[in-house]
Image (cartoon, rainbow, N blue to C red; front, side, top):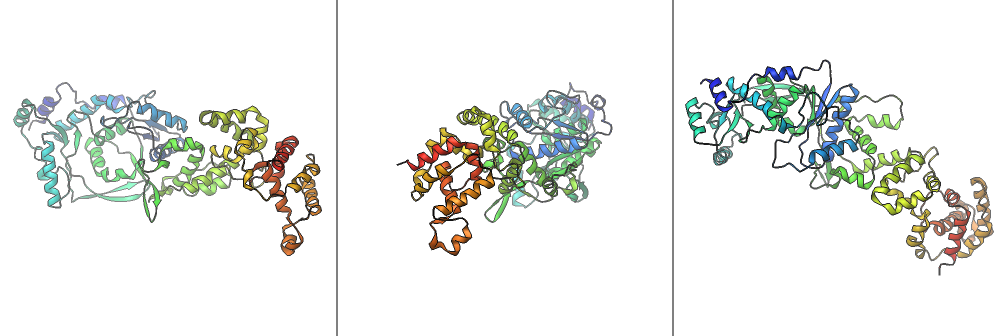
Length: 536
């Protein structure tokens, strides 16, 4: 077979001189280069974001480059404007792309715009006798698969099933003249019975059988498959570290073979364990079809900050990050591939919420309010207007039990702000209060307390006087005394506090009642107690 003649027959207008592209995209001296290469099939899901995030932090901490490449060779799955949606999601998450659609010297960064490059390299393979036109029909391929299943053989086109790999030039020409459909397949030089060892940056040494499948390189429309396109792109973009999901491990023999056939320097691979979810007694991969927490938009609407998701990701990437984060160390944390999990990473929503609570507890009241206002301006304009009407009042609310050694951790999302603090605002309190649930509150006690209450008391003075007030009205000044002699008292100091709390908030559990009263101010405190006493 004259392979040069065959290549010219198949690609008459394509130059097979790959040195043009090798020179056009030179090596990047001593650069750490990662890439994120999604398909434009819609919004990012949490697993894709996790992969992009790891690629980003590894590039940043190594003073490297991160590339965004859109792999749009499967037009059937493509969603209109998906590329822009992906870019928006990455920008919202503050993942900085160094090269991509709008910048960089190694583009185009959209695969559909690189078809001429792929054709050049495929023609080069055909000239070397390493690729060929295959005229198998869908029906023939289906029949082959059925035979292989019956015979319990490996599925695919290889060996005797690769029946078009040795056609003569005249036979190929005749097929073309009859307008027969064809694809371009790799003429694999591999032997499945031979094995090779591969060093993965996360999983360590793995042994694989060599690839002997004549995989499709160009589909019938001459658009490349993922296998071909990503190998050429990673080479020409000079990617040094491919960080991707472990579902691609089974394809590694194909990719390894293609790199060797082209005589490309192979990048280092790091196959990330999937994010998993516990469901009953089983653990399964997180699913964008089944699990709401798989959607990045879910966290935005809930009001969990991107920073929280990043912190949680960090704990999954390297387990020792969590102790570093809790220690509040000033030293920069260094991520390593060796500490990344080999098995699946359980996506624990409870742990994410706990991290979020810690994150919110460390914000200043001003930081929290400013970010909260941004959230409610987008998702609840009525509450935004209420919060922003008196900025200082809202600051004081959020400052309750914040600047102490162990600040409260009752806020896990921006959406919690309304559910935690709605009662501070008359606009909501008089519509939503639950006074009617409390029939046994001592109204007489509250009437007396309105006369006794002094807004100017500091906390210690207030509590000392409250115990005196309790004693004067038949309540024990301590829970212990009450428990020792319950028949001697109407109740204890805690019951007095609860009565005041219910009148002011219509709730039994709230932050510190003294601080609530200080924030509300004398007039609001007296007004609410008075209205509670006279509510019927």
